[in-house]
Image (cartoon, rainbow, N blue to C red):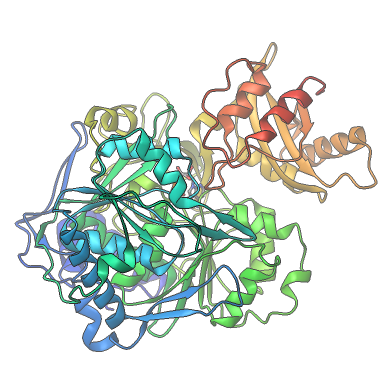
Length: 634
Ligand code: 6R9
């Protein structure tokens, strides 16, 4: 496609155009999509209200741009390759024509079950092609999907159903994950005991779990599509009609429903996908995220399929049946672009290079990272062992709220630097602000990462609570979108994300990114992972508390702690030496792999009487262990 940047000077040129004349820049890109009616204005915006509209009065259906648009040239090409949890089970390959038919048919089925334009539909499903079909069928008829990660509890599911007053739930009997079999429908049943808006539940058969089908409410997927037409006329949507809601946790307890709309999201996910990954026709692209997260929405389903790519979907986990699974899949399907999270990289790093040995990994051209800052050690391991030193790493910084990648190398175009997300994509106008709201110009500066001009896939609101959206993102710095992340722009103008600003600690007047300290700690060869938080310190203001997972073999705890301190001393300097180190067996993590620092901060501070909501943790048991261990920490 002509929108693809191919050289560094091309990037600079496009970037400049996007800032000087955003209307013309995005208008030209949007021109390559199919619209029932073109827009009257490219963008209207006011960050104080906030009120942002893209492609004003444009009419479209996103699925026509993903299905009909590709039928002629790509009808027989694979849209989705599905790799099951169990490598012995058959792979499924779904062509663009088959996807078109599946989406149309399921769209008709949903309509027949009473879903109308504007209704909210919860998708609580495993990683199977039908989950993508479900999302697209919603978009086809103008229903608003809200995917909930199928590992969330009944309580979390119920909260989300309640918040958006969903009319329908799409689910499965069960879910395979590694050697586990999870009874998914049971969770839905429990959630629905405490909610009243849901009228229908459509259940896909996957595991053969025994399920109770509630009369008049539950229907099997296969029955719902039985005899239903595979032709469907897409609902014509306004560019600013809601496409989906995705719940995400913020600094306060209750998750908020981030809202994305049809036109801008379509344009931006396509554009960013094509450029960041440099996808070429015929390539096989694989993102290991779950569709329950924004990465799965934008870069398993919408972005790749809008771009006519072949997107691989994996049902399982990286360590099943063994820690070579990712690499086996890369070879088996000749994956060209591979996109995963630092947490997965580090988890696999623990097994060393052995599990990679049987695999050539020679189809890989681009490898990507998303979700958290990638520490230097993991970056190098990924680069050397997975990318074999020849694949550019695209470290992509973005958020549920941004809809698409904001800061990232363009593969093969932008020179990379370990742990740097590098440069903003065209259209993304970053600003670094100090705590008083002054924009810090020039290079070698550090501060709050803000964005001063809208991009097409910016969140429009938080569902049902616009004031919360204003407060969270648009009130800290007047006239700016505030990301909540800290950032450094180095002497070359390159961006390095330092982690959430609430994780920045100030030790004796020196500001430090917790990620920076963690990076240093992780350099110690025995350290697997670490998390650093600040705690009140009489003399320094804040002290540094490090929770460290490490291989203790052949060392006493005391020696190891001293060595870790010395490593940090060597890499950053004496000010960054952890005051307290606690050796732990695990870190409290959300199901998307993020460390719950709120909990660690409380433990470090000694405030363990009220730990708040730990229900979304992957491993709640570890919290008790850490609290106990904390008593003896020096
Ligand atoms: C896409 C996604 C958003 C937060 C974000 C930041 C962190 C994401 C990152 C990164 C450093 C990267 N984050 N990507 N930090 N480098 N490449 O993860 O969305 O789940 O909403 O998380 O994740 O702190 O603010 P989401």
